[in-house]
Length: 433
Ligand code: UN1
Image (cartoon, rainbow, N blue to C red; front, side, top):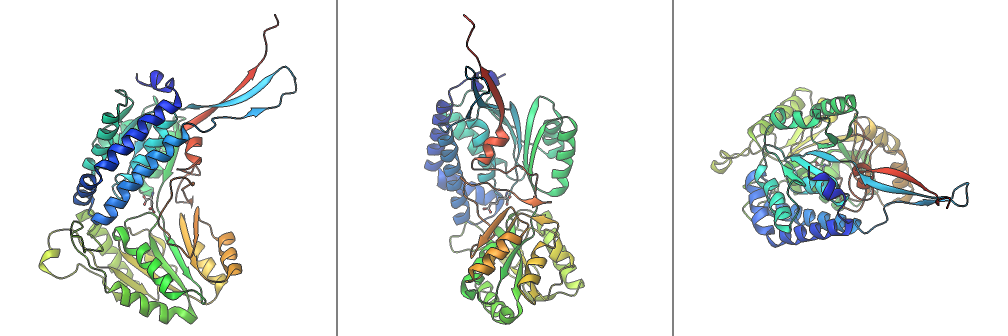
């Protein structure tokens, strides 16, 4: 019911509301970050960073409301004026994950709202409070009733009805492949529009000329920040033989310094897994890795100590001599588990990097511009970094993966406009008299 009035609101007026929501969120960053940490478990520094990222995303899409919305075209008929207009798709359903409980809801909701859609959002059942802060900021900013709707509950109770409802024109989902594939099938069947961001098995490729200190820092951050619970996390380090030993030694030395604990404590580097289920899954994968014959170099269990009995902790874990066909080299683990895979040469490293079902992000560390470009050209990934971490995303650029990592529709940046709008082509002719 709220759609017609919102669709007809001038885009810059919609942008002004998003700017207000951004300011409100920024002003309460400490409170939101604390709630996020208590709910999801990541460290307070990460939670603050993520909340401020949500603020920037609101601001970026507020700015998009004064960008061009179409194009003009020459016509075969000189009296005809042809232009395109981007119009909203309608009611959109957003199903968001617990691992970025504020940034991902905002990176879907901000463009949806900026381009004139109304939103029904189902946040992850594990992180309802963080999502509530978004609703409160939008409400206090003065968004009209019914334009942004937050509905809490399980996938079964809330997600399924949203996905199945033909009045919901588009669904955007971030989460697991098993849930995402079901959503794609259902929405395609009913003729809706669907975008899914799913798993990753992202490689950090370390070439023989890499700055090894840098490569280690990037691998540590990619593998263990957010306790490895990012679809962009580094879960494989593919390392050329000549630097394998030096890289591994430096990596272990650095990983041993990471302080694991409750995210609210300021000196903690890595928090717990989000839930008992997630902890169990990760510990099971570690057992699978051992059984498959990978060499466990670090971690591999729950850290010992009284303080780790409350909370779902897993140690930073490193396996070496991982063969590419092992499950820990192929499947998304979503925990602090890194598989080191040796490679004989650059071509093999690239081949190993591509030899997984996923294609979200990838990185190569090298000083050699030719090797870097060969990797960039050959890698099957939606996001490629050279001498950078596999994780991370800026709001103004497209985000998304190839192969099983997602649907072809990208999120964020100008790509978000393609998903949250449809094109109307207008032929304008003069009246005959
Ligand atoms: C990041 O790497 O900072 O769910 C963002 C995820 C991704 C977002 C990653 N959709 O982990």
